[in-house]
Image (cartoon, rainbow, N blue to C red; front, top):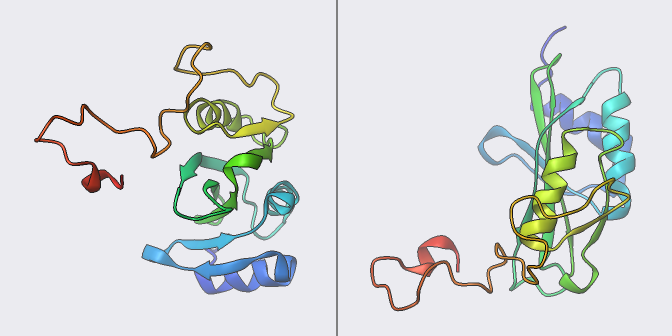
Length: 168
């Protein structure tokens, strides 16, 4: 099958999802869209089932923390890939720290299992319906989520590491 261009991908996305998508961009040649958590699983399923796009491989899914974005402090980014068409798509969703619950993608992509556990472990994003949402690297008794930017990277008395270089 011939490769799909970014322009064709964007046109297909707009045709299928319309106003469910916003903030469509192409940073570094990678089509990036934003949607809502209510739309993410139906969208992933539709992309998976689409006979043209065939986005059947979840390459990456991870949590994000932007503490200055009030009401949208946390997010999840999904990178899906069509091996048949050699094209990738980045999909982002954002939500508040107080309501950090997202539907699981494990029913569609087995690879989402560990990725969602990692996002839970480090960012505190709960994946509703996940079959085994427990910490993956940190101890279960841990009450904080260490990748959130409210935690300093290193001992604050060190002069060789400057948090601003790491977005903190």
